[in-house]
Image 1 (cartoon, one colour):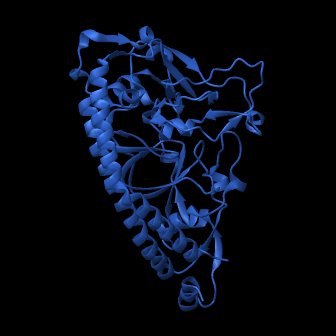
Image 2 (image 1 turned 120 degrees about the vertical axis):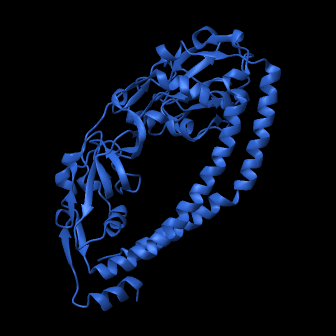
Image 3 (image 1 turned 45 degrees about the vertical axis):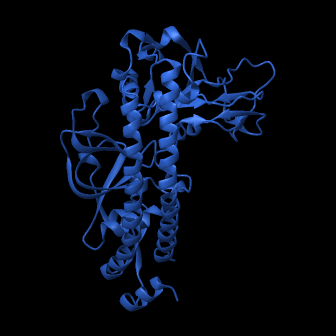
Length: 393
């Protein structure tokens, strides 16, 4: 007999009923207020969108504990589960996330955990995907005694908190490495008289053009995906993504040393992430349409290994973020970006910086090697117990 069944037998011997979410929560969508990027005043309060914190602003419209559920855009994950955030304290929410709070007979955390494993594919519609308030409130949830909810939440929170602590430790160590990248690549370290605009030292090249979803079925050529760029500062492997390219097509392929930028994102701060292509291979590899290439006119100007650090350092990112347009979806302007002026360090200096940062990176990976495995283990434990404890029939 499962632990859940034991709880039900003890505290709910006569069974339980299923109720609609509208009977279990209050919804506060009418309090949401979107703020355009250029209208936000920086501050300490989180500004939430569909998939989490988008920014920090100087005021708040909510104060307490609430469950945020993606309404449009980032609504559903790869397992068809909803995109959820548990927001506490003072914060602001735009109009891309539903805001709910448990009524007296329910616990917020119980509802949050229960919703996290639901398949919501039947109530998400359209392109981009959207979950309306009406569809959200039709979700069925078990109405069980608070004592059972408390027991379930107590166990799950134990695992969730442990996993969160491990992730926080990994993040702290990552910030230590970022500190040295930004210190060594501070623009004031370099000769300002040897600075040039990007448009004078290279050109921008687009990714794949005129492709539809059928182009990515039974493809014959490799391509670098948006996630490949977003998740890696260096593309030093042949990607396992394929697209149909015909012999008479005029598509741009990647060259050794190309710097690839994420050209578009739902999150302002994630726009323009850079990755450097460092493969020397005869096989042509292409680039997805949501990214673009910056190609140096002189391949000897920047070492590719230096580029992977340089184009992700704080001083460059600060300039890059000024080249972004958009309100709900953000796009990097190549025209504005072309006027960014960057220092051109001597190759000897580039080699020294690469040598230092590579050693720091290797050391960082060694001391962090156990943490990702530990986090994965705790995550699996959490999901196992969550699935067992929320297996209502």
